Image (cartoon, rainbow, N blue to C red):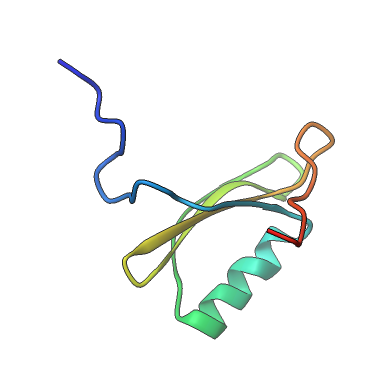
Length: 76
């Protein structure tokens, strides 16, 4: 059985943001755009390893920056 390239409920392109302060970004997305947090996986230190927020029919994936994955440039 072939694997679907785009999982059910996702669009072809899903933005992924790596930020300093993912919890604050989730709060901002909720207040500013009415985002619904679909999931959040915490790191042992309490930071966000992975989260998904839905804005309308679109998803935004985000996480806190780590040494291996630095914060996304604000120019994106």
